[in-house]
Length: 515
Image 1 (tube, rainbow, N blue to C red):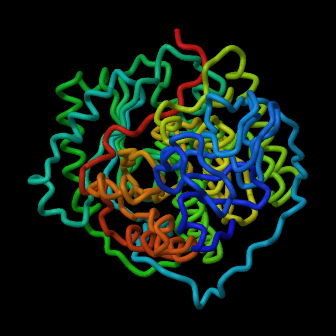
Image 2: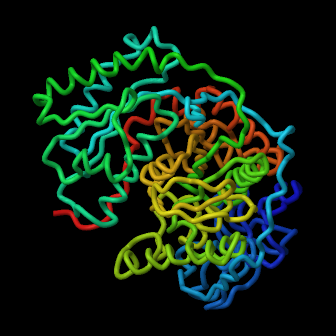
Image 3: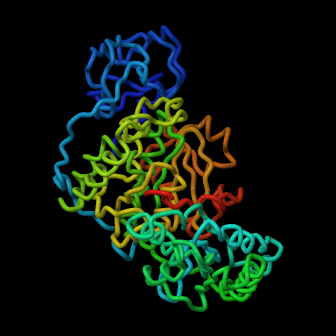
């Protein structure tokens, strides 16, 4: 964890590392502002979160933030000048992966002293943080049917089932017009099976059309799913069409509701928590407040025996060597490098995407010059502990501690893979104000700065901007986030849940050829 004393947040700029040649504007800085601590006078008007040259930077010199290279100077940059994408170039450079060279085993909290939360224990021992009934479509052609089934169960109709969090449809745009074998179909089925098995779903209906490429029988066989009282299947062409399938689905859910409602929460160890880590709408403060604070919370969770999933492969690009060095073995580190190379091979040539340097307009407006700078902050969400495993999209998490899952940077797609892999809570940092929910798991939102938190308080769960304001340290905020994780896992509604978000964020990764 990067240590920063609170006195660094008093002046107009923040120095993150003694070797940096840029500092970060803590507040909006006017042109001509004297910064005695850096012995510079600003030559530009600099918005909060943006970078200022702390010394003269010559053309082609590396730009260093946290003593990590985030780009190279396009031209000579005078001390006190705004440093952003207009004078910083994204350029490849060699990185020493040094696999497992910095690996340190986790120092666990003794079991008797580990934190607990109020979870829902399923008959097979799995632990849930929420209690939904899920309706899955095998193909887009059955999407309307699954949504109509779920929509029938309004709040009024569910009023007598107080222990059921809802009936939710998981529809998508895939399932046909795609390769019948290989990774595209395997990925879709792996994702669906991960949801069908998710402990947060007390029961599941799977609805197919009948003529799609993602045949229901193929899904069930390939993923070792067995139909039974809590996993029911329907094929629309066999059931009698749209109306009859919807009626049959509604009748099935009615039968399942009393069973789902019979659960009770009970104390369970925090080791049953698996947190999906997300960030979106980032800004120049993401790497200073919310992301390292979430990393501190992850370190606490891991010491208590829990798991966390770092993802968004394009958004660790450029700093992946900081993860390979912490890998539990060379094999784990090389698995991460292989995923990076896959992305470079598939997406790099002639495409305007993140792994080629470009970040979204919102990230750019927040002060981030390129993907290296965003990755610097994104990777901090994983904390400082060892990297224990690297997974493909939607593969089940079987290893305790920090793991990495290969996903795109697009938040709904990434979170869908994490939930399919077993995440039972999403922790999402944002500097611009992303609005996000992720049924069937709760999602907590961590704001990087106080002005945005106050503006969007209905959507944000915790204000990590207090670190910037000097009223909380990273470690204190990390403890608060960990406690919020426990409270939320115990049933406390997150802001996104209060707003009803999460019905449209099931988005399996679409790869391969469509025909």
